[in-house]
Image (cartoon, rainbow, N blue to C red; front, side):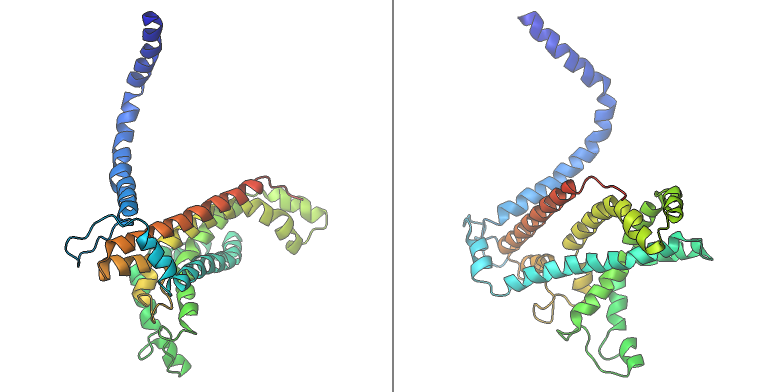
Length: 303
């Protein structure tokens, strides 16, 4: 039995020595994920069950679900903040891809100066988010903005509840359009032109070709890239913070901005961590539902 056990262990040792160099290359990435990803995640969940605050001496005691109960049942604005988060994510993603489809179709055609237009498309994407927010804040400034100057109005775009969300979504679309267009453009270039030629011979017009060939073959690209856009939009709040800081009131506050407000303005790390945990759970459930929907639509056929 000892010999059999030794024979089982020896191949594992040999395999480890064989791939030891590969394991050494993986080790820095693994350590990074453990230290800077997994540990902060677990620590955030732990803090959500405590009353940790930088303003209360002796805080940090375990209080169970009190933070979550307070958020869900004693915080009137929390429901509207969740709705704002859904509006921000789904609205931004929807309009980004709505405009990305025709934009990518144009950039995929034989237009004059196509390389130049493709290069200019990337400008909003490579521009830092904070700088982009400052630019749009200046454009829509109620006193000195160029929008009011040319429209001859005095609308406080970022302070009016009726206009603030259209401005935020416009800014988000401007920032995220290049990524969506680039993904769709890559998908379009992967579609064989023979399919369009065969459809043309069969009397299929441009409109019908789009719905029978282009859209079905783009569906995997759209599902994957939309998921990435949704996750990135959900977790990043810099644009809203620079433009409105969640105001007026909590009109444009979303879960990530609420985390920042609770944790680093009110210094209530326990409540802020609870909000972060709820936000993470929302995103996890959504991703699982999204992937389940994608699995059901995994087979695509050109009809």
